[in-house]
Image (cartoon, rainbow, N blue to C red; front, side, top):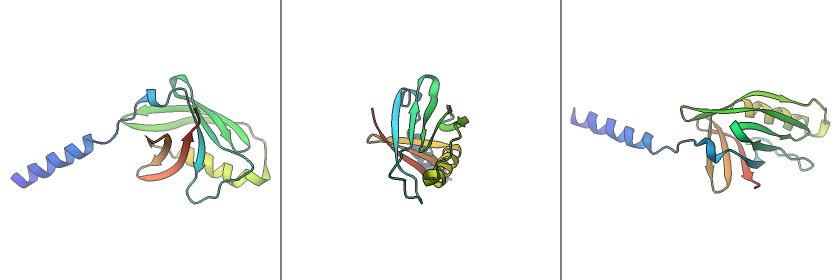
Length: 132
């Protein structure tokens, strides 16, 4: 019984050490995509992510502009209501589709050393570098 209580306390301590997502750390920040695991990024175009007041998002998805709303609840971040322009750029089409798909799968984030990691569980989906 004593060991069971000790394990429970240890799990509680480890889970409380997890970094809390603070909306203020996202508000009015700009990021440039540096990594989309499993894909080589196009060199001729960039993808960006900007957080405005109330966690409204906007950016460039290589070819098109997009916007939406980020929400933070229960220490998770999600991206909702993503909309965008619909120009077709053949050279960045695959990267753009992969980028927007990954953005819609986000349920977690961490910021470390001016890098933003957007996650799905423990899996890194997108990595950005802060630009402002």
